Length: 227
Image (cartoon, rainbow, N blue to C red; front, side, top):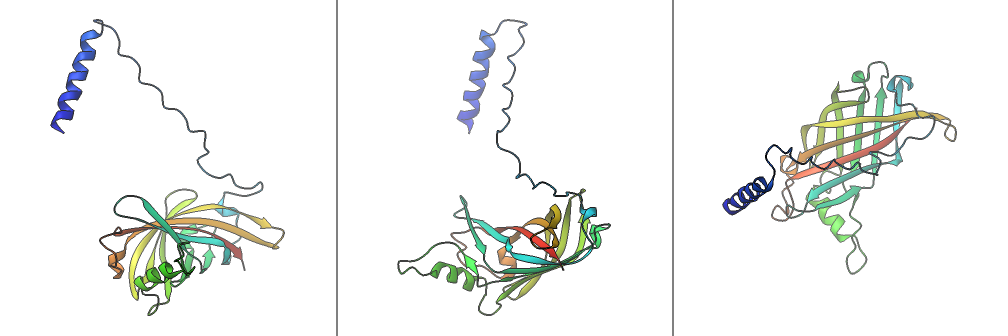
């Protein structure tokens, strides 16, 4: 670190000595805008105004929902997997979204890493499921307790997460991704995303501590169909 500081100082001095007195320093190069869009575009006819969605009960469309989790391996790369089986229910108040409530469940045994052993079996998935207590507590559950709006389409959802037989509070960062009437279903559909980071040891999940991180990031995307 000391060598780096000395080298940097020497470089600055050399640059200063070659510059003309009174000459303005060269302008820093401007940042190049990314050619990649910040987000996927919604379909035509989608309303991004939550107040335009019908009020009442909604059921999660499990075929169009995903719960992905990520954890650092060895403190380096993010290892990503998902749960295949999820369900949920939403009571939505479009005029006062903070009054809405949501519950969700996940089959703890539905871990999916996409990795197969030499026999073509999902042994690693089962190891992870056992580590999170799937045999004794087969259901991971979330129930909201309050919602705080942070913007026109964003909010913080505080609720209770039950995992490995233990229940502790969590906060989800949530976003509304639009809604519209789907002719094929004959019903209104609204979409949300949510994100949180938990410390797995808080729920008693401590296996592989030497190889994987303590923090687990959970990413949720789901569509809800009006009942």
